[in-house]
Length: 634
Image 1 (cartoon, rainbow, N blue to C red):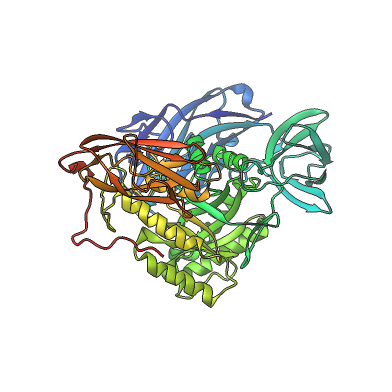
Image 2 (tube, rainbow, N blue to C red):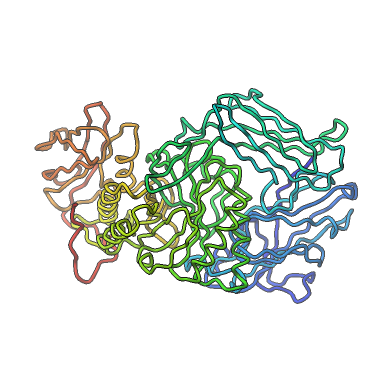
């Protein structure tokens, strides 16, 4: 039976890589993993760094097999055990394993040395600008101990068990294939399926040579977007010899089929429009606990999330499975820089991604950035050709900036196109380009995979303009852009950028500490959520100077009433079809003002504004030299 031991604690780290790889490290410091260049305070460093850890390997383990498992190392790495190279990995955003059995010296300490390098991309394609300086060990490092015969551990980050589902005449078909390492002819592989309540609903057995079986499930429940519809089954796979269990794995899966056309996205033959948000890293260390992020995505009523970069742990995908959140995976690689050498590695990186998350029903889309060039289009076509042969459970999406889309360098075998509307600049012209693309090819499935603008929760203005980085303009941009996108039925899904602020962008709907939603977050909740709520905008804009102000309230209720210090605001009973309630005549007294919003359903929200003599200087962030007009309505 396999065992997994985490090795994150107690490493040495140095930017001085010794010529003799087993030599003592100079200028080394003690660290715990994950640990990256930015975490080391060397944000602009490009080159090699070295990690080392010694682990004892008892003599009694000599009859089994040992593997090192890496969650992610950016961007290339060479792994040594006791001076011997056990593997080289090119690609910083996917998990991998190396077997170390033949390099182990049993009964003594064994030195693991990892040399990570972020300086050379020639063999692995370009990386988007904000990721090109990152380097080091992003993910967990584990020691995996397995028997001589086991469910294979040499297929990147996967367990080598692959499940496909379909339904025919009301009967669910679970087709499972497993790859066994070092089997013997009389071994037996057993597969048992359990429903969400833990009841056994089907089973089959297979030989280890071609460990494949089809299991029938009567009247199966489907996995659909939305936590109440995200039904999951569990497959238990056992590898048996003479009645003894050699290895055992448990895999959760769902009955989910996806297709896309000009008429929409169909999940299990039901049309679904994706309402999503991008979820990235902060550039220092990966998130390890995604519970708060998933809760925020659910609270705002989103049903999809776009992973815009790299390593996410298995727990993230488990949460998305459980909560019925559709996942769009996209590596931060710029295929326009692909050459003959890197094109092969691109396919490898995407196959690693596909194998690692093959059984997660939440993973519905895999996207590649063609960069609007013929070279990028050819590289994306190679990637998609390989993925379609291996994985028919996902859709392949060509990801491009809208400004490149008109250049004609289309990816011929993409199932759909994802267009990024960068930085919120010229939003109206972007909408015109979307309309033009639809007119030219009305059958093309289109997603808006990214749109957003910077907005800081500490910067405020009662007259926001484009480029001022205020929370108020950030909200205005999202209000206008979402309404424009929602009106266009040919757009199959949209992803706002992004869930959190990071160290390289303030586009987040939530502040980096995740405790302060920005006003735009509440706007999306008014558009997407079914649970009733009311929220007064401008909570962070607490200090005011004007006697008469405009206040905005977000709610998915039909009517809202507003009061100041217990007195109803003139025309305080307002209704809105857009989820945005505007009160133009809110009068403040000098000092403290308690603002209260109440709905007909009895829901309420309250904030405190303080009217002062002078403006709060901390609210003034970056301003344009010449003020520009605020966004127009439709």
